[in-house]
Structure formats: structure tokens, C-alpha cells
Amino acid sequence: MIPVTADRTETDEFEFLRQAALKMGAKEAKVIPASCIVVENRVPLKCRSGCIAYGKKLTCPPHVPTPDEFRTIVGEYRSALLVKFGLDTEVDPEIIRSIYKYWLDTDAPQEKKEKAAEFWRNYFTESNALLPIMLELEKTAFNAGYTLALALASGSCRLCETCNVKGGTCIHPTRARIPEHAVGINMKKTAELAGMPIRFPCVDHPEAMALLLID
Image 1 (cartoon, rainbow, N blue to C red):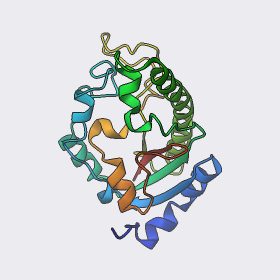
Image 2: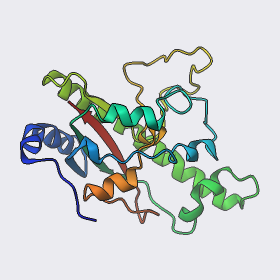
Image 3: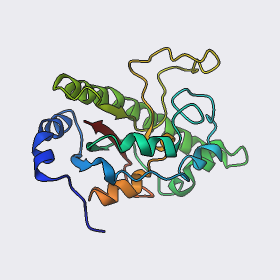
């Protein structure tokens, strides 16, 4: 697959955001055309078939734009900043290929359940720290005149122990952001198209991806 990049004008225009992402700790960052964001109807199906938080968060399905709706939204943006973060969480090769199953399956061996739980605990702690970075990038773009800049989070929202989904109103509306997969973004394909592939299954340490829509 030939990597896609934004044209030189847009790359130069948003170089300040790419540099800001790197200074904030990103492993890689790249400006891409918004049209290269891969949105698929099948992606949120993974949310409905196995996610224990399905329907329990205001930033996740079915409370967010559908892939069809989001495709239209993306079409109104020119560019996006694709950001990759390297995490320190260690991967145990013995469990990584079934990490979700070992975490949730009551019949899983106790030792593997504990290893999986430790992985997710460490992963969530690290990924939670990425949201403030993306919010700061969003703010930086906004203050530069790109008032419709919007960050998409890496992973589901964990700002609250229990989301106020029954109340129907987010308690942290200025901080909560929708995760990419919730609106149908295939991050694996998008990253490959941008020339920033992510390893899956991960080896040694996982990587996290996030997006900033810019216009």
C-alpha cells in the first residue's frame, strides 16, 4: 500500500500541530487528507458483539454518530493529524492473542486472568494520559483559527467511574471525546494508508493511535 500524504500546502500549514504532538510525547505524527480516514459500517459491530460497556457510555454507540453520519462529517474536513503513541505497558506473549478473553472469561485460568487484568490496568492508565494531549492539540488548533478542530480519543472514555448515560448528559462535556472506532474509523487501515502502520497483535509494547480533525 502506497502511503498517502496531504499536499505540501496543507503539510506546511499544519506543521505546527505535528511538531506540537511530537513535543508532547507522540512517537509519530503526520498530516493526512481527511478523505483518507477509513470509515466502515462494520467497525462498530465489534462494540455490539463483546464489549462489556456497550450502551453504557455517552461517547460510545449507540449514543454517537453512525458510520454513515460520520462519513458525511469527515467529508466537511480538509485534513487530519494522525498521532501515534508508544506505551510502556509490557505485553506477555503467552496471553496477548487472547487478551480480552482471558480478562473477561470466567472459565479462563486464574493466572492468565490476572496477567490480562494487569495488562489492561496498565494500558488504561497510560491511555488515559493521552486524552489531555489530544485536547491540548485541539486547543492549539482552535487558537490558531481552526475553530472546528476536533480530537478523537484513543479508547473509550474513562473520565467517570460510571457514565451518566441514564441522565443523558455528560458530566465532563469539555473533556470527553468520542473514540475513533465508535464512529466506524478503521484505525488499522487508516494508519497503514498513512504509512504509520500499527503492529497487531502487538509485540513487547502496545501502540495507541489518535486523530485530530482539522479545518
